Length: 253
Image 1 (cartoon, rainbow, N blue to C red):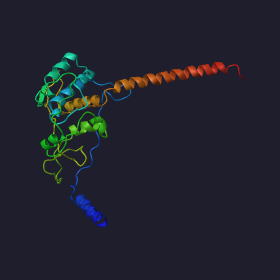
Image 2 (image 1 turned 90 degrees about the vertical axis):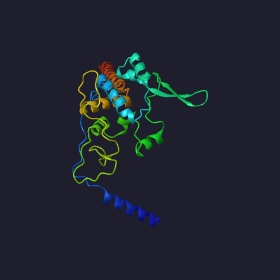
Image 3 (image 1 turned 135 degrees about the vertical axis):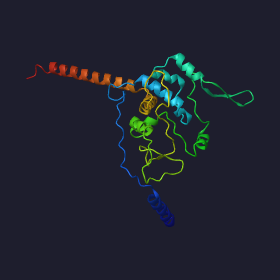
Image 4 (image 1 turned 45 degrees about the vertical axis):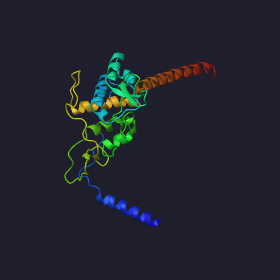
């Protein structure tokens, strides 16, 4: 055991010595203004719909959203016919045929979002051994939440001079260690918005983060509204209690 500890310590020390030295200070977390911030904040449904477009056209090529179903898109303001059309344009597994062979067909509103890979092994094989994370709860799963995801989407820059990059890695100023296996997914003009909104990198990142925030917390607005009602009720009851107390004790000297 002592020899093993010595070997591990040596490996750890060698790793520290071999680690690239970042020639710049750590980049501060972006402090974006989100429509869903603050106690009365709500989701910008137009931004969330554009964000779904970004996810569908770009992110869905590698990342799944296994907790989402097409019918859930009603939460960002899509009508049943729109949802039906979106689902019908996607082919998903539909069990097996009479001979036991896998079969596929158009998705329905009740279908789970289509995953880009059949399983984790296939996902790793297609991505050099890395497993793209599921995005259903990614905003909740990362420290910094929407600000971090936005910073990651907009954080691809050339590596500083003297920074040694590993093969197949990309420099991202927001990602821990600054080396990430995902190539830059968004650029100016990556998607064409049908509502005429500017399709700059910043706008695309803002919109997809809005969509992912809604997906991770679809009940956020309802929770806030319930919280406000509870606070108002408690304030009201405090006033009533105080008034009753004054009435009951008014004759006591």
